[in-house]
Image 1 (tube, rainbow, N blue to C red):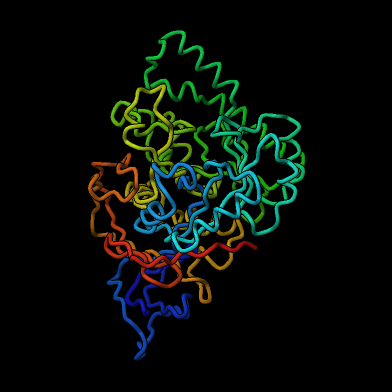
Image 2: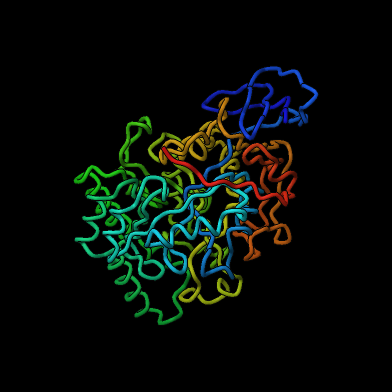
Amino acid sequence: MLITNAKIINEGRELHGDLRIKNGRIDKIAKYIAASAEDEVFDADGRWLLPGFIDDQVHFREPGLTHKGDLATESAAAVAGGITSFMEMPNTIPNATTREILAQKYVFAQGRARANFAFYFGGANDNLEEVKRLQAGEACGIKVFMGASTGNMLVDDPKTLEGIFEHAPGLIATHCEDTPTIKANEARWKEKYGDDIPLAEHPNIRSEEACYKSSLLATTLAKKYKSKLHVLHLTTAKELEFFTTGPLKDKRITAEACIHHLFFDESEYARRGNFVKCNPAIKKASDRKALVQAVKEGRLDILATDHAPHTLEEKSQPYVKAPAGLPLVQHALLMALELVQREELDLHTVVARTSHGPAERFGVVERGYIREGYWADLVLVDPSTKTTVSRDKVLYKCGWSPVEGITFSHAIAATWVNGELACQNGKVSPKVLGQRLLFQ
């Protein structure tokens, strides 16, 4: 396929030109490429051609929770949103805390995932020896829940936690919230309100203190053992003191923001209710502003989704019973581009944090950039067509979106995965194009 007349956005530069795909890879990039008899020509018509979004944090719910979502449905929504690769979390049922269960998840994805895929291995209080045996390439990272989680995945035994940071054979990705602090806050608010705790108290229960205390512990352990640490979904301005600006390649400790924490603040609880209930919680407007600035200046190196679907029935329960988590992969890139439209971020920063950053931090082989010889994972953005989110166009199995009713300033015109059109004008290809991600 020959993509012509594109505004190619990559590595801080723009090129108005053409791109040829051959055998799934980017064969040539130039201002002008003459079409051959074999080329299928795709006219980009001046629209923006970006490297595909690599989402380093999703919960696609398979196995064990497939009433909420599965690898096929959620990856279809992902490619419709310009996400060409995903890294899926281990708190499925059973938890991916053994190498055998981890291997089974790759089997489930083969021939069903429409985007490229990798899976995290889960740390637990009782699987340190299994962590030590993990081989290169088996997982994109080791996920450590330093806050409450599903099943047996809360790592709160100090010796085990130290052991993981000392012996982990690869990158450690942490969910940082201090469980004792959260429990104490819950007890305080339950004493005041009983079972009728207002949703607005969610960021006070999953508090700044809980996040800060846990991030402090994670970064302290990483420095002690010289671990490769990546702190997931930061939500507070205070935590930013643990992270530095500068080239990503020079960092052993990194962190990310999730798109909903950049897009929403606590005022949305009154408007959207449990549909914006997530962990860690969406917090103050001042926190949102500080996170956006940290993404802009490179203190936060990656932008992700933490896509976590729940059914409408589950989300419609009272606050204390409604599960936390939002489905986001179909609209995350549009949300990020809306921040560009508002002049809070620039387009090159969005590309760096959604594509280049995760590729470099996780060592993804030959993806995340528009380079000759790399896999052709691409997304074409139409900056002159708006997208209004309505429930009838949502592709998630759960059937709803936290951004329903919002009109975005851009549209996802097309997505290529491994050189083939995975989605065009909102229609997902029946072809299953996803491949297993490889890591350096």
